[in-house]
Length: 260
Picture 1: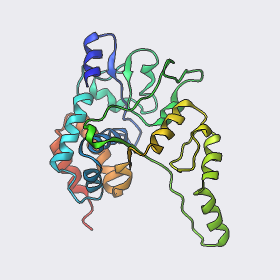
Picture 2 (picture 1 turned 90 degrees about the horizontal axis):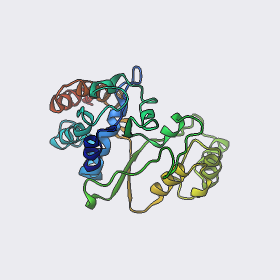
Picture 3 (picture 1 turned 90 degrees about the vertical axis):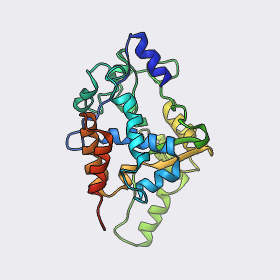
Picture 4 (picture 1 turned 135 degrees about the vertical axis):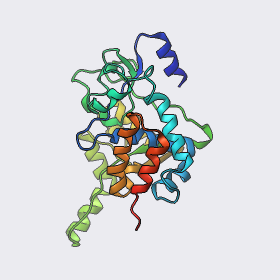
């Protein structure tokens, strides 16, 4: 927040650019922002309670996370570099949202490591290059280094020795290293050698996952019931960016949670 204020005060560029447009899934990148704040501010126990509905979606801790996130996303002095005001976030495609970092219209963009696929060929991705990634400092240092992430799940439709053998291979360090060497993916497998990664950014991501001090949680909206995680939460983000108060948005999402 201190850096965001300094960049905004300097006036050369906006501190942040963001884009939540994704067709029928518009709003999903905003859920990642809120999830990160819940985990990093409230810690993993509250995060787990929220995702499993042990506390309601409109719990004051969650509403507070929306409001903290809004200190950036709803602040026209901080967003949306290269695109417009805060509401332009909803019409900016998520894949294009980080591009203004490359031409100096904004300084920072919040996204997963797959953002690298959207940078033009020839972009120097390095600490002293055209663009680089970093972990935001903890909101509360006592909560540790916290990361949210997503991933692919593997399921089988037939229980045979051959299928079980293949699943066993896919869960192995051999598979993780072979897949990561191909590029475009990382793995949380503890046997993965970071040197297998094809980019310095992926090596950094693997090192963060393997750091014993890291608190990792799976993407919250992906774990919630579909009626919430891929429906009302997305729509709530859209309403919130458009000006609906956080409390009203959280109340509406809570009302959509399946009763059984």
